[in-house]
Amino acid sequence: MTEDDQNIAESGEGQLAIDVYQDDHSIYLVAPIAGVKSSDISISITDEVITIRGERTPGHDIPTSKHFVQECYWGPFSRSYVVPVATDSDNAKAVLEDGLLRITIPKDEKVKTKFISIEERRNKKP
Figure 1 (cartoon, rainbow, N blue to C red):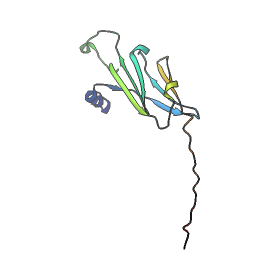
Figure 2 (figure 1 turned 90 degrees about the vertical axis):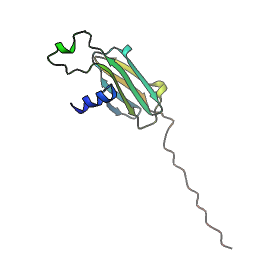
Figure 3 (figure 1 turned 180 degrees about the vertical axis):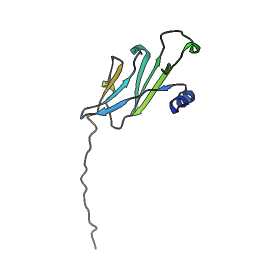
């Protein structure tokens, strides 16, 4: 049993592979989800965590005993990712095209590093 098989057995869900990258304005997540309709996928963003859930269905009713090889995972899957920067989740967008789910989450432009000047005081000696 592989580590992935053990994780599926323990959680009952397969794990989704993702790539995450950024530019100056947005965070991007890309996940290969071939054979899944957009209606079978849900995406939620809570605070700094984005979660993708869905289900792969085989599209046939051939029993497992009739397979020579069955490497594809069929069933529910999910993946959560902690986004490392503040984002504007209200303007997030997702597109499913050619088996790739692409999620764009704009960075929150209001959150900027602010430097605070330090006032120096000296004790007055009597």
